[in-house]
Length: 386
Image (cartoon, rainbow, N blue to C red; front, side, top):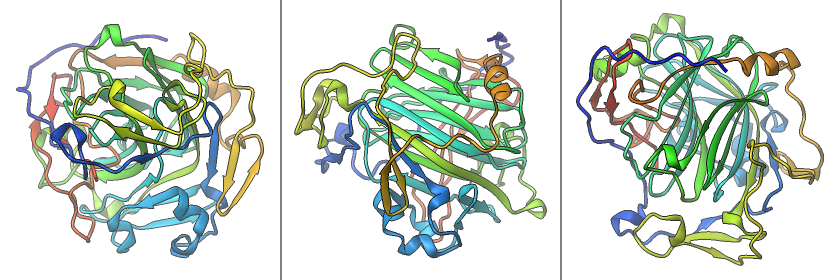
């Protein structure tokens, strides 16, 4: 992995993050338990391409709705979701759309791999977000005008100071084919990988704020390049989106989720016992024995168990299907991805939840902050759908 040292051309003043949660235990909210994925240490795979195809059929598909919760803009047909051969197709045709789906269940540390194709287009952002009720977060993001770049970021308790964000160059066009992007997250590491090749590893000793509470997975697209957002956000997104080029389409074909269950071999749900937001405050219902966390020292999944594979309303036991467009060459070359950022060369993370605080029409609220297009340390508030 080649690393490019970031060049600091300016420093922007830090702005408080404007993340949102429907129920935040760190603010004294009494929140319902988070249902656990469970199946501890074993992958649960949902192949979105097996949901009945079409624009509206998913609304009546029990398998889809048991696993996923579409945000209200999609339910109101203002932010289109359809199903096709490439899985869930999220489409943007105007500046106020921010289509998003999120899992109904949570994982308490674990591994998440999503096979996706990012949406092209200047000003368009595609995201994979792991977010907790108290706003711990781990992200993958793609800027539609940067076809051979992907960004990684993480932070804790909504305090997105944008010092953890890194931009990685990859050897393929992320908007032209499906590729697999993974996050392996434990108390000791966060490992990001592309098509099986590690491109980034972070440890708590390097960062003073660490995501450590149960998360949902959120998949979505949003418009960072629109006139009612701050200029810094527009610059980061590559400029104003040109809707004469619409529709802007992202595809999410499949997802594999391994819940490490807080180091237990069994879990029913996760609850917050206090307002600290620490992993020690999480109470695991129906907890089993201590087994530690999945993966080895290199962040590889060492589980020999076959995954539970969900095909819409059907559940079987099978090995996950390989990407139809990823190749061994992709895997090898993505390991040579160059990276830049860190220490402040970070972006205003809009995330899959940039449609946060929306009305029923799916319109996104404003994001506050400042940024530089070149390399400035920036901090922009961003919005997360509750």
